Amino acid sequence: MAESIIQTDKKFCYLCGGGAFEPLDKHHVFGGARRNKSEKYGLTVYLHHSNCHIFGKYSVHQNAQINRMIQKRAQLTAMKHYGWTEEQFRQEFGKSYLGGTEDMKKIGVTYSMKKIPESGSGIVETEESYIELPVSEKNADRIMNHGTSHMLEGTVDRICRLQGYYLERIERVEKV
Ligand SMILES: [Zn+2]
Ligand SMILES: [Zn+2]
Image 1 (cartoon, helix red, strand yellow):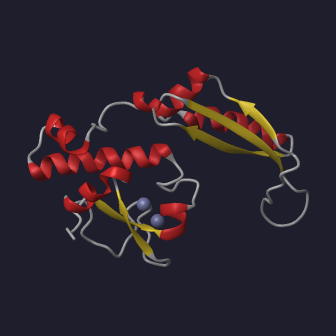
Image 2 (tube, protein in one colour):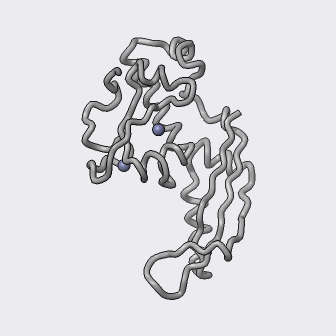
């Protein structure tokens, strides 16, 4: 069991910086077949179990962009720590994560509009008022590659809210 070379202080969540108000899981930055290598080289981070690790909308296992961001950072840390070139990293891990997201091209981003309940506190998800707004492939590409989703989302979100809806972004990523 190698110590993490990315995160030495394990009392905080690597993603949100919050303390251990909920259990922190050890997450292997490169999973699947690369999990053992992540362990061997200390490419692990500690994340809030629910929100930041497994279930949250912005958790590493739900959000491909967040996951990629952490993978990029981990690769750079590993290259510095072990004195590897990008090519040497690729030889160890089978690929490099430094480029864009070309290898994640097959994306579909859809927005579902959900009715904001008229009374009560907070937003309750109601499956019955479910409308999908397909986002063009070009926009989806831009969102994935440059993370400029906020402008687009913000605009549509404001329009929807005026009409009593809120937007939920659903991102679909298939790795090639
Ligand atoms: Zn967290
Ligand atoms: Zn994990």
